[in-house]
Image 1 (cartoon, rainbow, N blue to C red):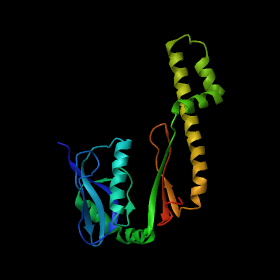
Image 2 (image 1 turned 180 degrees about the vertical axis):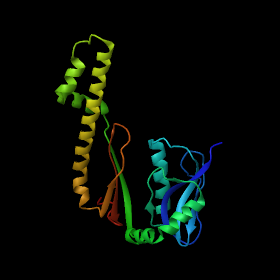
Image 3 (image 1 turned 90 degrees about the horizontal axis):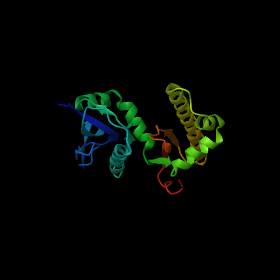
Image 4 (image 1 turned 120 degrees about the vertical axis):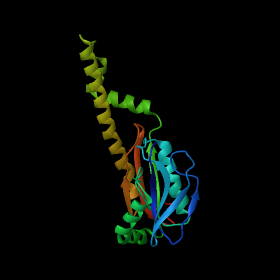
Length: 215
């Protein structure tokens, strides 16, 4: 039997335990609730202590919980896939980092975190462009059949690795272009890992309340 842990979505300040409904990550309908140490709390739900698959469904579930909590609280979002073994472990963490978390909550008060995910719509066109613009890849794909199966596999593997490398470079360049105008509006931002070949950027921006539309 798989042990149960506590999935942490975000940190809040308050005095009363809260329930946000059966919207926990994992699709089991787990109740999202709070665990407090003094007036500092973590928003959590029960989850099996197994490694989570990084997919969009799980990421969206994580973000929806945070969005629900943000309707009533200032929040410190916690990184995706953060799981504690027990409620006591969470209380211990909150106690040890109480001053740090409370200071951060005061800093982000009256501010909102806006998530931005950018995806390429037509990956086929992107990959075709990469192949056409890189002579090494084009030659690897078009060269005559190899004398041995090993040579054939090696050539294909090299071409795949080359495409992957160029794709990452293209993503970084596109993300930098997008970040340019947003830096002047955001108070702070951080870049999360992207998932899948089509995701160009996965970022979160901290902006003053009232600037959401401008952003």
